[in-house]
Amino acid sequence: MERIALVEKFLESNAVLDRVAKELFERLPLTLRYRIYYGKNFLYWLAFLKESEYWDKERLESFQFEQLKALLKHASQNVPYYKKQFSDYGITPDTLQCIDDIKKLPYLTKETVRDNANDFIANNIPKSTLIKTTTSGSTGIPLVIYKTKKSIEQEHASLFNLLSRVGYNPKKKIVSFQWGDITRGKKEGNFLRYGNKLVLSVISTASTQTMYNYYKMITTFRPEFISGFKTVLLSFASFIKEQGLLSFTDLKAALAYAELIHPWQRELIEASFGARVFSTFGMDENVIFGGECEYSYATHLYPQTGTTELVDLGDTYSEMIGTGFSNYAMPFIRYKTMDFCTKGGCCCKRCGRNFLLLEEIHGRVNEFLVDKNGRIVYPVMDEFNPDIFKNVKEFQFFQDEPGIVYMRIVRRDTYSDSDTLAIKIEISKRLNVPSSGIEIQIAFVEHIERTSSCKSLRTDQRLDIKNFIKT
Image (tube, rainbow, N blue to C red; front, side):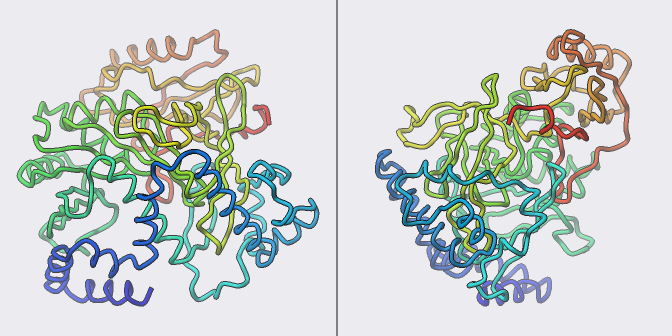
């Protein structure tokens, strides 16, 4: 951490040194750059993930089993919560015979972690080395999570390995949409240009003129990749479409982080950008990590970073239960992610990886709706016709009582009553209203709230969905 702190302190010293330092850093060989900024563990994991990428199923399961035993041994000796839990359930690392033996333990919930946070912190790791992070609270339960430099380096290595599937490495030209005042309030504009990077501030994208300026900058820069949260990429893609602008000529992929992408959104971004969307899947709790195949949109879950159980919820839906291997500072064992998915198989015939496949990730449990009879209904936005939203900036479902759902809409200046009619017809068709037992009401709003990490929620669900689903 000292090396990173020194680098960051130097970069922040003044505007001139800032640009010079970034330029020099970008010119370093990748291996040296990785070692300086990320560390030895990052390099080790980057090499290991490459080596193990095409291991057979038996070898991967053997690796998982050894990692699981090591994690349980650490937790039983150093984490107060697990010391007591393992004793109560008669579990010890030595009695573990296979990965499925972990199912003798109960599920771990967000509420349990939140209410007993200190008992989840390992007492053999110096507190001065712990790195504090906070989840966005997109399920209504924000968490404080402590990590180590080693576990964060493994996260970065996993992400770099995943992005290499579409040809990305830090030497490639990339545009990155980032939150915050990236130029520290300087007047020349909220962007940075150094090395092979063009960094644009998200806080300026509400302005049509800024969006157009960004488009011209990107067109001149000619990047191979554009990265950012789905919300930002979608907003920029909508701007390109409504302005009738040309797509980018040299772009290979749009790298979408942190948020679930639905097919209609993917279609809009890909059409506007002229390149595929490549999305990642992960969480602050570090229990599950994955991303799309280079040959399809199916999500591959990395077996090297943890184990994933899929618990059947009926109607083809499963909830993901994760146990992460990397974060010994605050382990999560059999953690209920509250993410729903549809299983796609145990290996990919297209790429040859023996990773667990997800045909589709549906989102968080709080994205489901509840009808008047107390049954959960998944809003099939994946099949919505994107043309009906051409005059809509954003929209979101809101529900605080069974059977009634408000569709919050932020209108563009070109929005009219005919858009409202088209949206009502489309929703009625996709949700099968009224037979679904849900009444949809349109509500116009000036803006839609973001989470603490600036993500947008597709559904602001105020009901406790756990009371309406099978457990």
